[in-house]
Length: 206
Picture 1 (cartoon, rainbow, N blue to C red):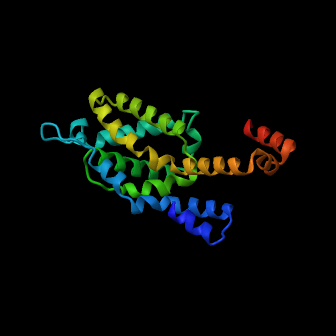
Picture 2 (cartoon, rainbow, N blue to C red):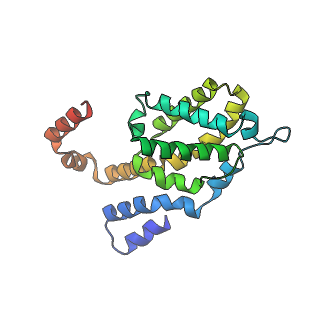
Picture 3 (cartoon, one colour):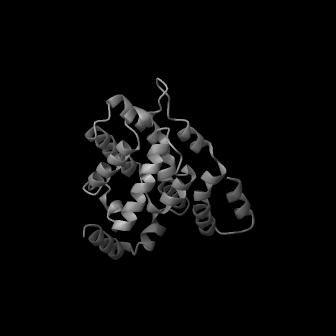
């Protein structure tokens, strides 16, 4: 990456370069709009109707989102992301509804370019993303959206994977690179050696 090489040529240490790259990564979407265009063009017209019209309109999507959030708050794989106060929950539900309406061919009230910065610091993995998609599919079934329409919606949603999981992906890449260059002994020391790992495991299972 040119930015990384330029920083290194200035004599900036690797840890600082990594930190700068993490900070800059959320801005990629603002510069590269290809993903946004792919998502916005995902809604197909059938018999003169877009997907939003075929599934029953905006109220159907609102019902899907309400059902989805109820499910996510019970799913042990992802519920810790959604245990929020009422105001924050309402805000996220509105934005998700706007996103899905736009993805189905309705008004584009949510800018896709905001997705990556909004999720970058949450360390969302492919495992988490797949869990949410699974719950989204079931929520669509609960509100009686026909299977073919659900498949069409999911085709559009899965294109957002990179936007949602990029924060975790880039941190994993940095961690792997650091381990390759410094080995695991340095990481072992940073964790506090045996005592530190014991404390970590205790906290992990609380």
